[in-house]
Image (cartoon, rainbow, N blue to C red; front, side, top):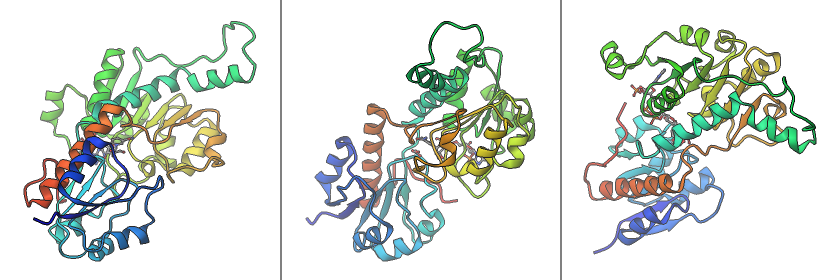
Length: 323
Ligand code: NAP
Ligand code: GLV
């Protein structure tokens, strides 16, 4: 029996790739950088399945270039803002993603950034490297306490809740903004839901965990930053374009908020000479939320399972809802 043809847009962990190779005729993109859009469009012509990453733009034109035989798109990530979901639905192509397995790793990274920002870890490291550590001083590198501080969580889904669990262990007070959660569910989850303006005004720390959508693009902008406390610390491990980078630069420079720590940026990657990187009160890491060995193996396994299910015409274990 002939094997289905698939394009895999980068080398992924063997835990998933070996499964795909065992059951498919694989065209594998082996370069470190993602395939340019035009090249991707060429390489998907005639494939039955596509295993892609969040760095690939999967739009209606690309789906049409692939052809009507395309049975499944499987993304090795939970976020899918790079894929035109309505276009896939119109063409009857199920889209898979990898929810759940990366929740804890991403919540860990969020908390690592929160602690690093609160206690000025990166500034401390740079302080030593600059030869400034000459004695113990009563008022140098003073940061913020977590115990008793208020953490505002924007988007109370899987990762938002896992962050809440960690914050509870640090005796933080929690509030959340998530218009998709009912009062009954909030009571069951033990979280206080508030309006966005209330969250921004009251929180000592604000952490973002929504998907990137038309509603959340630049949700953190000049206006919302000015509603935050001057002492507030902003964390974003969701998607870069949820935070307007120009507005963030102005707010950090002017002291409108105290500090920001980001795992995701707009644009991504961010250039080493970007103005944001000149600020002392900002820490950025390169989109490593899910980057633990076990998590990436599990993501690859799920991406492979979604791909193979779709090729067999079966329901995907983790299918993106058509909305
Ligand atoms: P999730 O379980 O779907 O949680 C997202 C929550 O935000 C859901 O409750 C969602 O409601 C809600 N929401 C949607 N629109 C909103 C809005 N306008 N305002 C406030 N809340 C809103 O997703 P997750 O697994 O926690 O992942 C969240 C996002 O994190 C992903 O979409 C991805 O972009 C990002 N992520 C980043 C990394 C990284 O490496 N840095 C790793 C994993 C995930 P509905 O369910 O009704 O839409
Ligand atoms: C990573 O950003 C993901 O969405 O899985």
